[in-house]
Image (tube, rainbow, N blue to C red; front, side, top):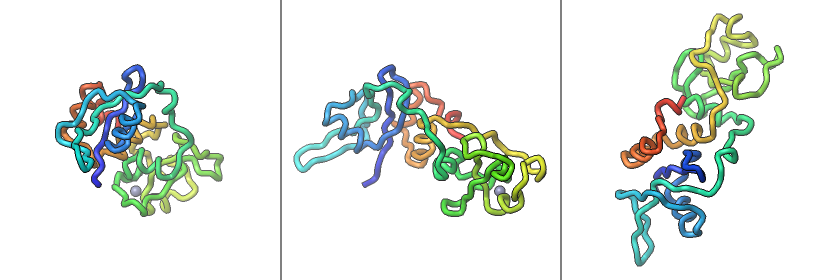
Length: 179
Ligand SMILES: [Zn+2]
């Protein structure tokens, strides 16, 4: 079944996550969220009835529960939209590598600020050097993303007109939130 994105707001109406419409509908059935808007083009059906899917929901928690933890390889790729930080090439899933900007051998840590997506060519060329030593400046400065940014990047291929409308109504400039 095709999954559609649902905008999730916290108690204070601050955007914190993107859930699938199925998950949001389940929360609605369980009484665990308040549905603020419904899709007009997406439905969930049971054998006897058809329900509009939630588009924007509000859950009774606060933003701080959504802070991003330590990076995983995959989360770094998603943060960087699978784009090599050195040459800008979009790397296929499965071919992306992680580069320590300050190499491990020079004390570089496994952290959001020191990890970047790299194509294998750039990774090999850079080797155990810093970007300066290798003459390979970064195209963007890696930062710790919010988990909402990770969610937006993860869902971006599934964005539809109604969801983009919800983002804009709740003040999310997704082109700025991403990347
Ligand atoms: Zn590259």
